[in-house]
Length: 167
Ligand SMILES: Cc1cc2nc3c(=O)[nH]c(=O)nc-3n(C[C@H](O)[C@H](O)[C@H](O)COP(=O)(O)OP(=O)(O)OC[C@H]3O[C@@H](n4cnc5c(N)ncnc54)[C@H](O)[C@@H]3O)c2cc1C
Image 1 (cartoon, rainbow, N blue to C red):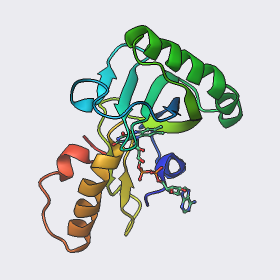
Image 2 (spheres, rainbow, N blue to C red):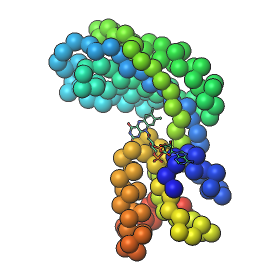
Image 3 (cartoon, rainbow, N blue to C red):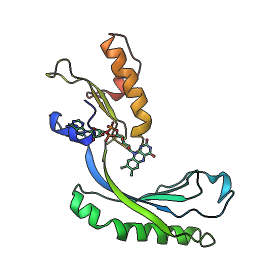
Image 4 (cartoon, protein in one colour):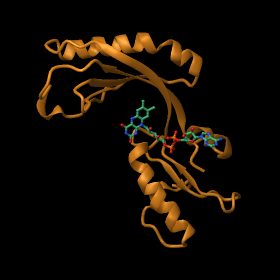
């Protein structure tokens, strides 16, 4: 079962909180390096923000999350949140003028320790869960696939305890 936060209905205890997150991408800006190494920038305040440069030299920014799950309310806030992200970007990089091209929002689930849940649950035989909750969920999905493969092949996997539902 790898249905993201939709899978929560099958989990008998509370394992994750749902957030609304917002993002924008700018029109392409000038060629070449925009900032040092075009590195990923992550501001670890609350709410957090991140900025990165795409292959076609657009600025992609996101964050300013809301602690609720409500797609209608979330989507109604996209323009306002994109503007707030743009203002924060302008404050940090007043010498890089950008214009927003697209903006969007999404829901994501976060766990208390930031780790995903991968494995099986008592009372649910022959069912394996790969729930990549958290900001690194895409990265964890590869580990999840390897763990479920090993579980089906009845092979030991050293990561099993780390991501188990009983941790
Ligand atoms: C804006 C945003 C930016 C992010 N940035 C990053 C990042 O930079 N790096 C990173 O590692 N992570 C990032 N994440 C988090 C990452 O996207 C998630 O943690 C990860 O996608 C979760 O993986 P998942 O497989 O558990 O669920 P999902 O990727 O949500 O996949 C669930 C899938 O199941 C499908 N589904 C739902 N219900 C059913 C059903 N009943 N039957 C069949 N299919 C169903 C859905 O359509 C979906 O395709 C970001 C998330 C958001 C919203």
